[in-house]
Amino acid sequence: MWFRVEPGRGVPIYVQVKEQIRRSVASGILAPGEQLPSVRDLAVQLAINPNTISKAYQELEHEGVVCTLRGRGTFVSDKASTISDRDRLQRLDEAVDRFLVEAYHLRCTSGEVLDSVKKKLREKEQKGEGIDYAGK
Amino acid sequence: MQESDLAVRTNGITKSFRGRPALNGVNLEVPRGSVFALLGPNGAGKTTTIRILLNLLWPTSGKIEVLGLDGVAESLEIRRKVGYQAEIQQFYNRAVVEEVINLCRSLYPRWNSDRVKRYCDIFELPARVRTAELSKGKLTLLGLVLAVGPDPELLLLDEPFSGLDPLRRRQVLQLLVEEMAGEGRTILVSSHQLQDMERIADRVAFMVRGRIILAQAVDDLLGGEKKVRVSFAGPPAEDMERWPGVRSVVREGSRFLITVSGHVDEVTGKLKKYDGAAYEVLDQSLEDIFVDYAGEGLK
Image 1 (cartoon, each protein chain N blue to C red):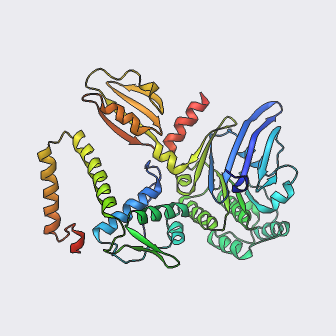
Image 2: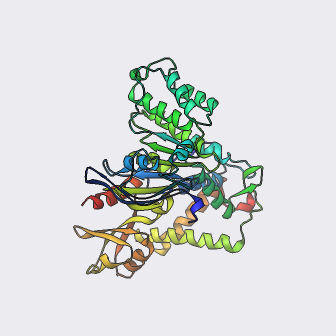
Image 3: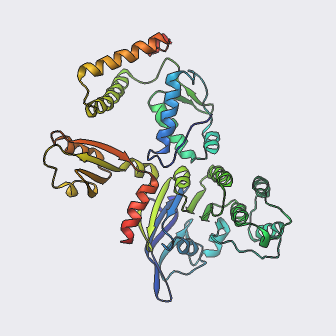
């Protein structure tokens, strides 16, 4: 599996790897239950430090995106995510905070922000890419 | 850090060449099992430091420990456990590649012939060609193969990408990643290829004028060193230079560019209190950070 690693972007490489795995899981490219490459294989392929891959996998596991089975490997979590409701909502809050900071700097009104979110949700549902996790 | 957790530990190494100081008190701590990148402008003392670790040069003063062994008294033992790739490769010009490899094999208690063969194949090193006829890039690659041959606990690499094209550079990076997988193997590498160092290093140290001016985990460094650009609607904050972590404040017309180390949330928190202040946080690459620190160190 190939991920784009861009040294020089000013973003730690483990964060870059995490972002791409999260994105692939969210878009369905990586299916629940699918096995990710081993730390060593991915490190050699991308020519990056194995500790970097380990760190990305560990954080993704902590966030409930993947799970590691001892001796078997790392897999994309299935629907029964291990992440607790409290953690889940807290992480959503943080993401919304970042989004609102962006909106603030773009001088958006509350109406524009809400309309944009609703429009996006509608578009995704129409394309059959609704974000309701339970629906998948 | 526990002593046994360190592959290299130096304390206040100084070295002068004919009274001219080259190292001015080098303190290095390289954790076992890590990849440690030593970065610095030409003439900063990187090669001198590496040679002192192998006792190829004597320090003027200071204490050196490599793999728990005394850098001077136990240097022969150290050399058996360390693979070293020199910045400038010098071989017997009339010997062919194969002969150089066989000679090196005879110098070490252990030698991984399979691995050496594999890397020679990957790098397309011609066994029967005299070293004098090899290109600069091939010499670099030969030096690297010889350094990993003894399955060393510690690899000291001085400019391992010198003279390599992008394809070979990537192959060397992959070789190093494979080498890292070895149990507890430590790599200390000096290089000017900052993007490659960002790929493989756990920690980096900036060396300027014979001193280590900063040593940190790469992820912490990239996560902590930021620039913040701000424009104020009203009168600008006056005491920004004294805010926590602020290294410099530069005026850019009506805006300010703040360089901040490790306290970016505090800085943006303070900026938020200024009515109508708009700011953006800019990430910095390892190269940006290096140029900033090294440039300051050379002032």
